[in-house]
Every structure is written in C-alpha cells, then in structure tokens.
Length: 378
Image (tube, rainbow, N blue to C red; front, side, top):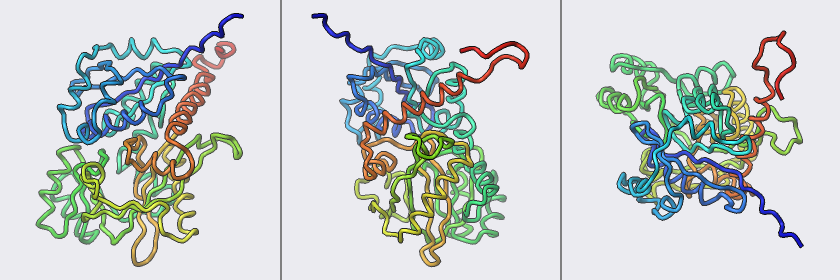
C-alpha cells in the first residue's frame, strides 16, 4: 500500500513590530495569532519590522516563550524575540510567496495599518489579511473617518482638527469643555488627554503632537463605551458564508477617567468588560447596524472593531471610530467578542485568511491591459 502523500502546508507570513508607538502591543497580538494557527495546515514565518525599517525573520518559538506582560512593557523582551534573527529583503520575501500563501499583518498604528504597508502588499500581488489601501488609510486617520462618517449620515459627537494651541483653544471653546485631544493617526489610546479647562490645552496638544502632526479635538460627553466586532466581505450576497456580520455588543467600564493605554494593556484591573453589554436589544441591534454601515462607508474589508458611545443621560448612540487592525492579544476585544459569539480564535484566524484569498482572487481577475488588448489574463 502506498503511503498517503502529506499535504503541503500553506505559508502564513505574520508581520509584527513596526515603526509606531504600538509596536510592543503588536508583538503580543502576533503571539496570539501564531499560537492560534494550526501547525498541521499552516507553516508560519514570523517577520519583525524594526523601527529602522528592517525586516528580520525570527523563530516563532522565541515569541511564544515570552510572557505577554513583558512584551507589552519591555523593549528588552522584544529584543530577545529577535535574537538570532535573519535579516531579509522585504520585496524578495513578498514576491517569493505563492498564490496559496498569505500575509497576516499584525501591525498597529502608522506604517502598519494606515495603508502604507497595504500598498506594498498590493504591488506584490500577495493575499493579505485586513482592509485595503483606502480603508486602512481612512480608518487610521480620524479626520478622514469623521468626514466620511458625516457624509454617510452616521451620528457623531462634535469634533474639530487642530495643529496649533490657538486652533485647539478655539475648537474647545466652541465645543465646550471637557474635550479630548488625541493624535489624529494613532490607536490604543496613545497620546490621548482629557482636558477640563483652557489651562490644559497646550500640554494636551503637545502630547498629541508627539505622535502625529495633527490632532483631533472631540467634545467629551458622559458616555458608555460600547464595542462590536465586524467580520466578512462587505459586498458578499446575503446567505454567503462570508457575508458581513457583527458580533454581540460589549461595554467597557474603565476604572480610570477614561479607557486609556494603561487600562487596555498594562493594568489587569484597569477596566470591567461586560459581554454582552447590558443594553436593550433594540439598542444593541442599532449599534450592530451602524457598525456595518460604517464598515461599508469607509471601504473596510475582512475585519474591524467598531467603537461607539452611548450618552448616559439621553441614550443617544454615537459612532466613534473603527480599528482596522484591532489587537489580537489574549484580552483584546476583537477576538474576545467573536469567542463570545461562538467563533473560537483559531477558527477566526482561518476565516480571515480565507477572506484574504477571496479578495486576492477577485483582484487577480481585474484587467491590467487596455480595453482593446485582448482577453484578460487567467
């Protein structure tokens, strides 16, 4: 009897690190993705992107040997992961991949989820997880997000953009205190400051401009923080297995004044998470419906966590922002919401990879010649 041939495993290239202030969070997210991939089906190549722009292949077991808390807070832990790594040429790596392989970018913040990397992946014509160039750029830039959401008719709290202390002061007076000042293109609550009166404007703007060259000024309201997770192909037909859907809704109750970086990642008691959120079913359904509308309006694809506010007194629901490459840490809301909705993280990762290939097949069918140059290439 002939021995059954062993199925060749597909390669998943997991990218982590990066050039943003969220690079340590990225390492923990990558740890979760790597551990969730079925080693019988997938061969993992773990690539660390350095602050200097270098790409280095590292051993997945080095990443898995580190404690998540160490990766969150210690650059030394990240250096241990890279120990013995092999420096690579990014373009050679990407163009060597087969159609059946996939890139899973687990990069948070600028230079990872803002469309820059996605443009490179498009040029290399490789399947990749997550939103495309436009959706990534629009979802990362809070001003672009707000403007598109306004045009789509999504309810939002009042906001403005500022690059100088004078602009921020004028905006805060118009919006009314308190206000939040935050970098326009950053995530994980990095650089966010709540300002109660005019005396705090200058310092808050300086903090925001440490991470970006423009800031968002947003009116503070007495709000409940609500989140849902979106998964799928936004243009799939109803009934398609990959049709767009939203998870159950969660509420975040921070133990600080707001849900800051420390509460999200460093303090195990930084917030209480309520899943499902204690809101009436019609409110939860409205949140999910608005999340799907925002996903489509912003040209997102594959995945996003979509955040909302519910006014504590009026009950009004406001769209806040999407996160187009949400955290995949053990406590991150995106995988947690899907686990609570009946999709284990291993299965979630497989769905995201399948969606990446689905989009890649569609894009390969597009013509690259002019209209009179014959039939499209197969």
